[in-house]
Image (cartoon, rainbow, N blue to C red; front, top):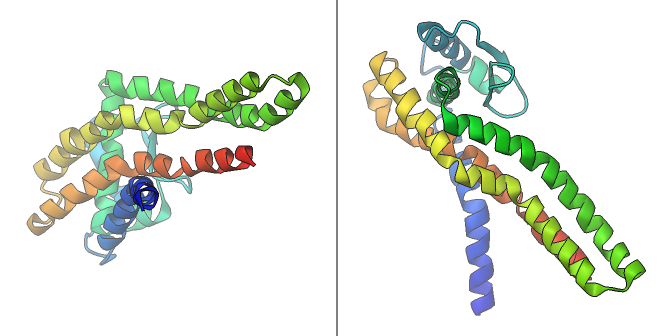
Length: 227
């Protein structure tokens, strides 16, 4: 009974944030024509108002994000071309990251550097886990296999750790950058302000929620290695 409770709790921690983020985003994606301008048009307008004409706005299929290396605000088709509250709010959140970059916001620079390190580490971790059983058989030293498995599992969780540590960067983009821009410019309908706050919180949690779900990879590897 206790084991079942622990399993359910872990599943809630892993899937709960992602479910909540998707639910909030989908809820305010209707009606699709709530605003006159699109998310892409708003992003371009806000960037120009901030004097960031050098930052581009373009479509992506890889999730809404700001690329500090290429200086691009990238929005998915629904948010780039959509006129919903979700489209407007997500666009403002990504512009918030562009503003952080323009202001040389140290936590954003740190996150960018950490993610550059985390992605190769995840690939290395997968390789280590694949090699661990074979190396254990060849060397006949179980401790080596155990050490490799532990190292591999830890490396697979680095992205989740990075997103957890840098969550304040996401919250800053939402509530210290995007929300003031939306309120100061009177872009939001007054009735939408509390809903926009909920959306901005969801936008801030998007990457962390997605990386939590990726922790299932660790569980999968662990199960395979125990066989």
